[in-house]
Length: 72
Image 1 (cartoon, rainbow, N blue to C red):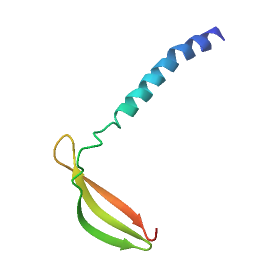
Image 2 (image 1 turned 180 degrees about the horizontal axis):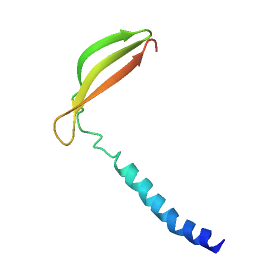
Image 3 (image 1 turned 180 degrees about the vertical axis):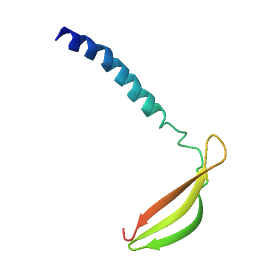
Image 4 (image 1 turned 60 degrees about the vertical axis):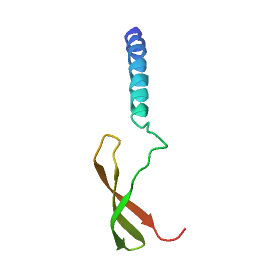
């Protein structure tokens, strides 16, 4: 039982550090322009699939799909 408690006390700080690192990866400059370019739109049933790209903060462009449902 002492081993499990000791192991848990060693693991918890590592998990917290990993969570903090994961969250920091999602940080971005909210004021930066995305420079979204919509290349094409394909209708599939009740959704529209946009083939887009946006500016990467590290340079270049990032390809992506934007799925928009019909309606509000």
